[in-house]
Length: 151
Image (cartoon, rainbow, N blue to C red; front, side, top):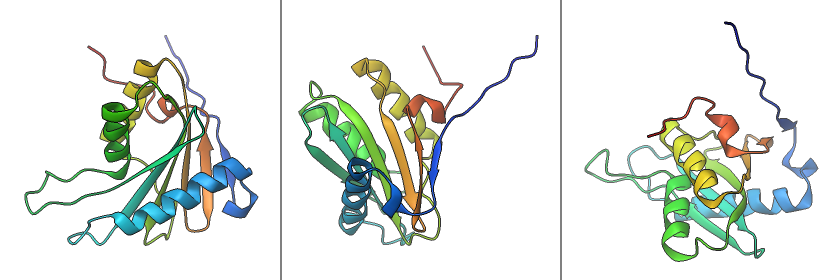
């Protein structure tokens, strides 16, 4: 039996053309890059999420001398959210990086955790991947990993 997958996304050649709420999240993610601890890769990543309440929270990547003890910006944000205010569900999440030569996409581990959060909170959320002046948006995080791990 043959099956196929279709991925729908929106691409913006300029973050200036994003809807205002998504542009605001990208800017918050860009600012979160300033808090990254990346002395080894010099690749600073920031993530920002809008919660149902309208509040915006951020996270950044953290590297450690004991590789692989570091953590990506997305997971830093998501784990902090779960530990502090999980009842205020995530409705959108943006990712940015410095340097920003191209759009910043989540790694495989982050894609799985993004899916886990959608599943746990019972609500899909948009993911805005930005960089190089452009952005790509998917309507739900689980679109980024169509074959997820599940127990």
